[in-house]
Length: 334
Image (tube, rainbow, N blue to C red; front, top):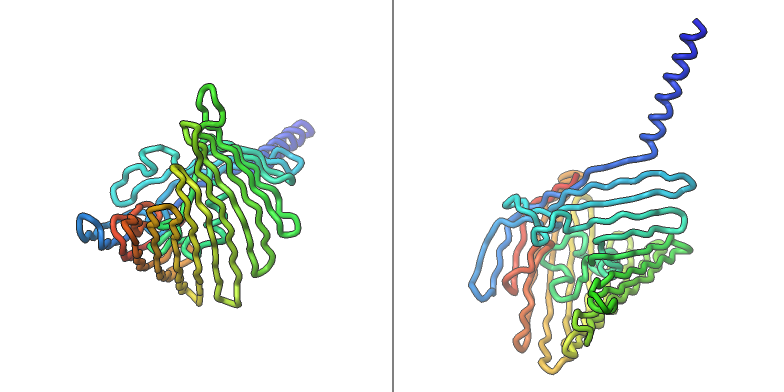
């Protein structure tokens, strides 16, 4: 009897240990399937209407993991594939995990991650500066403004929020033999969020492979919630190859009410180079939530290009082919 009780106790102990170990590690599968109709006008080849994937959000399949290492330290990782729901093909130019692929450590100190990741600059515009960022419909800022969405070979540190202040710094190795400065990425942001107010600034620099010039973007973005209405404003200074120089300014609002959400924005691209190819965009979008995971959307945007500027109205997964576009579709997340 005593041996039986000991055996039962050992079995229960082993079961509890294995359960605890499982509780300390987790892997989750997530994704988005987004598809809809896209009508473009004003392109060089004429009007076109097509079924597209990734209009409001790029369709994706992701895997996310976390392992508790003790002392509030955890190992984290993400691999995320982008795909085209209309054809079943891989997105991001055929790269298997072209959206994100990184691993790192997180704890009370913040988080350090290494791999292909979103840049601090992009997250500043996405989270603070653009009412269309959560749904990259026709009116999105990225049609006229630089996004600097992801970078390869990125080592990134995100600090914890202290008094509402958070910092994010990143270095992307250029991996050019003989000169570590060529083709590298330097990016960072500093933000403050408290209640209805969010204010953030970011800088992004890419040194070109020749090492003779660099692309630089500096962004200031802010948002403020007035009861239901949320107002957005952002301004970017861009300096690029061949002495390119421009200023981009966005003003917009988002108004959720019940299952509905309406978005409006205006973006102005002020080209300071000799060609003076200015452009401006007006956009309006609408979402209707069928559930917490599924929504319908519609949007329209138009760009007025000046002096030969060639900006087009794009979406989350498509740069677009005309200066006017209408979106209508369905998005489901899991």
